[in-house]
Image (tube, rainbow, N blue to C red):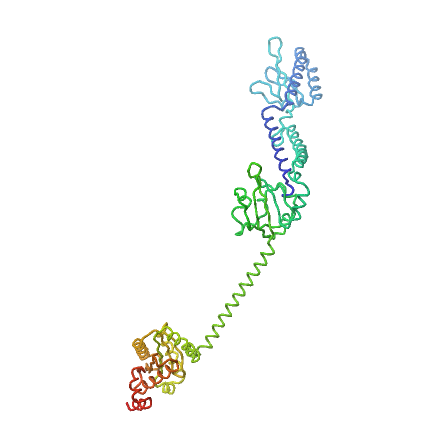
Length: 514
């Protein structure tokens, strides 16, 4: 449809509408000649001659001659429908052409275009009147409210005018075609460019476009001449700026570069373009148009999207791999029953914590925790209940030592804790809190029985420089807590004088006797 209604057709229709409007205005002002005046004059002459001829016959009262004349005139003149002579008393004396039914009495006595009456006199005495009924004037019939002659004139003007205007405008526009002012070699040079190039005037009408741009919308470059560039099928999406780049360039002293736009081709596929626009100035520095280049980056854009999709999928895969690695690392470093650090991982991390404590001159302590009479728990309640006790004890230790140190399962019912940053008194206070918290639990064993623990504590000093030394001392303190009655904690530093005085074996014997 757009290809049929070309600018030439549009202008021709506009000019034709103006011409017809002028003709209608002239008709409404009465400037058109009318056939009615001539018809009325003819009817007046016929009526006068008949009145003279019939007046003599009426005076002689020759009814037969009157009848013959009336019938002959009605038959001869097709404009006369009927004719009659009426007496003074209003009765029809002689009539022809079914005059009685055709005649309509005039209200004011004045003749009309279709009904004419002429008075007859015998001297000064009225003798009756002659009545004639004519056909309606041609102007009384209308087509769409217009006389047929005017309607035919307008129809002829519309057809002939449209063809004439189209012919003249095509010749005029061909001569005024801005593309004719551009040498053919310049057009050829533009067509060799890989980028689309469009030159538009200040009204955004295309003055020149090359084939690289025209192929984006599946049109020839010549068909774009005179077209508004903003009226092309641009895709209005989030990637399209609120103002077209050529409009911005018209107002700006600087070039507009790298504006992304999308345009639909004939197949409905969107093409991605990067637009650069620069205004064109005349000799007086006034902007007369814009030259715009369009770089088709559709393929590159699609490849970038595919690359981004691949990167996203890779990132998702890496996240899954990292998550699985974390799970594997957790499984490799954790005790499967209690989720505490297993023995190997605990001592690896404890070694690093000890090294940092020595470098930073911070206190560090090692605690050995053992569930009292755990074998008896397994024997009386079964290993499932024993596992429940170990899981509950591990959770309690992790909550108590959260942010303070490491908690690991040493083996069986024994747990180990490495605490950094707390002095000996604070560590003993922590051990006592843990002991009491465990002793207060009544849900691990049936019938509300309670579980108790024994704790051995060893702290870093000048003589204990390795983790093995702390483990050995904490184990000795734990043994002392066990032999001392259980449900308690013992610090190796508190029992150190007795160890040095009696030796480890003597101390064990003393504790056993106690």
